[in-house]
Each structure stands twice: as structure tokens, then as C-alpha cells.
Length: 228
Image (cartoon, rainbow, N blue to C red; front, side, top):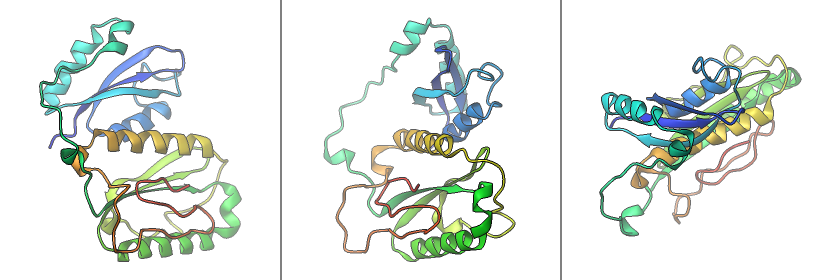
């Protein structure tokens, strides 16, 4: 399945930016860090208004060009005309045994005194999650003065432990920016997924829920909820 999409952003000056990408969450993070596109530099932070999944890059290029010709009002009102039958409630069942995990980890200078504790707690949490049954996708944001997306909806089994080389506290604290960007980007990714491929937040299961605690960086979670 193609991951290309066309998206509309609202800039801080209230103008609308239209773009296309094959990685929506990373592209939005780039815009907010000032190097996503020339137009959005100096107009941040940006907010995702809407996006349209496309079957191919060619289709995305055509749709992007079509939307860019519209007025601001027309862009805000724009919707794709998709002639498909309305899915039944059964068709909208989410994917069982699939969990989305997102961790926002403080890497500012204030953490330098507990670096080893943070690494150990994170790696213990990671090991506990890997030991549980079912499929999981893992997102990790590390922040200090800047926001850095380390893992973007990556299969949990392929996520490596933190080390003193990959986790080095320094700089200031941008907690609100990090949390907001992570929530927006993960929410956009989940919304773009077919309903039957999304993590199931409400199902009951015999296996223990994925939950743990990292003393220095997060609170216990439930399915599809963000770690903070």
C-alpha cells in the first residue's frame, strides 16, 4: 500500500500550506523545526488541518497541484469525492493484538545526573514490552532544546536499547513542543491507517495489558495512549 499523501497545514500567520509526503509525521516535525519547506520557515509552529492518502506518488502530485489552485476558503472546505459504500460497524473493527506505543523522553541537561538510571529504566521497559504477546509499533521522541524523532512507528522487535552513546542529556527543555508534536504526528499516522489496521484500544484480552513504568520518564499506559 502506498504511503503517499497530500496534506494541508495552518501556519502561525493563519495562511494555509499544501504539500505532499510519504512520511507525514516526519514531514510535520521537519516543518516545525524550520526546514520542511521554504514557505513554512518563519511561519511556525504549523498545525495539521487535513490530509488525503493517495494510491501513488503520481496521484499525490496531481492532487497537490489541484488543491494549490484553490482559494483559502476552498482549501478549507475541500474534500475528496470517494464513491465507496459506507462500511458497517463490523468492517470498522480495529486490528486485534496490535498496540501503538509512544514515549517522550527528556534528554535535557537536567537529566545528566540520572543518565544511567534513565537508560536502565527505559531498557527494562522495552524488554518487558517485547516479552508480551501481540504486535506493537514503537515511537520514541527525545527532546532537549530541540525535538528529535528517534523511532517513527517502528516495529517493536527492531527497537534497540538505549546506550550512553544514543542517550546523552544536554541543552534546555522543550517538553511542550515535544509532547505536542508527538501527539499530532502519531495521531495523523493512526488516522491515515485503514480502520482494520489500527491498534484496538477497547478490546478485552486474556493476556496482560502492555503496561510498565519508567521512573524517570513516563507513566503507565493503556493501548494506543501516549507515554509522557
